[in-house]
Length: 459
Image 1: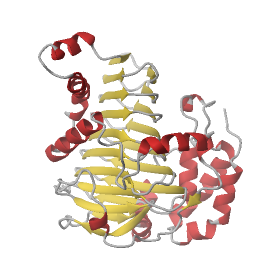
Image 2 (image 1 turned 90 degrees about the horizontal axis):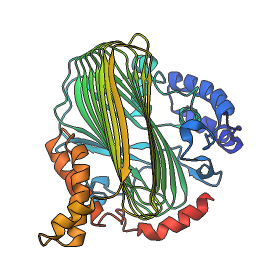
Image 3 (image 1 turned 120 degrees about the vertical axis):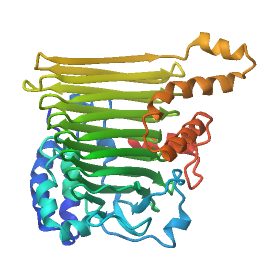
Image 4 (image 1 turned 90 degrees about the vertical axis):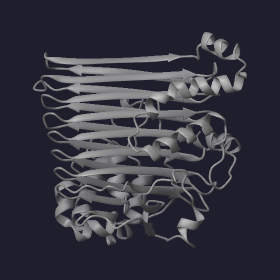
């Protein structure tokens, strides 16, 4: 069902069109014109659209939001003002504030030819890369939120790894939200790993101030033949944050992609994760962990498309929901008619800690080939009373026993992290979350006080 045209967002684009297009490359601006037509047709999807059944984002995109369409900079030394929770990794770090690249990167010198920096700047300096890859994965003609991003996003991060280059040091992108009024943020990211390239990429999402943020971020990733990419996304934002994250990956022959998503704290989050296995013997490994409480809501929508023969995918998502929080998971696997000898496995497991927490899960298999090994499964349940009794009988307090059981449940996802320092940091952050020590964002805003306020604003 097509949504009604969103007049306010179209008006926003027309109002700021000169600013949006001024610094962009001709190739990017050409895609904007196509996106305007698509958005006029699609609008922002409501929960009447099947793919968005459990998350209605329409109420959040309101004209009173302040769009950040220019780089306003960041006062002071950003590396001193902000300290990321994942701070012990020896990484090449760049900062994005409200969707715009900031000076202040640090880390060792990157290998020759490797590009990491502002999407706006590098897309103008390297038009052939943009022409080859930009807009090729993200479905602007099918999804109104992608069309809106293509229309309005000005900056973000641009990562290009040339053929056979190995980036030993992880590339860490710290996405910060900061402002004095309710803010609308657009961000566009492009990741390209050419043939035989290797890289580990980490996105960390944080909020610095207490105002409401609505974020529309789209990331396109291309993993070319024999390339190997590890991708991590850690969301740790206050309850006043509404985030749509679209992640669209294309894999070619014998490539390997490990993608891991951790939602530790948020207000409302919708993750669209699409992976297309487009070359034989490609491997896709996808995992996620989401932890919610109060009135938080997390919706993970994944779509793995096996388009050619002899590929494999493994998918595991786990969630722990407390208080009156809600979650949703839709995991679709599509095996095309020619994709013989496909191996595809999917699992979604959830813990509900209260009677008021809710979870909707929809595993889906769509198979058009006959020589395949595919399975999917989903569970929604509570902590094991017998296991809890066993721990209590050995002198462990109830609170500690609950934390141990929750961590044991999450352990399988954490173990999939391939960067040892990052694995240890995530382990500590997850434990803190279970102990209630991540209820406050970095600027010491008490998120449970914000929760009711932002729920009212959404009505």
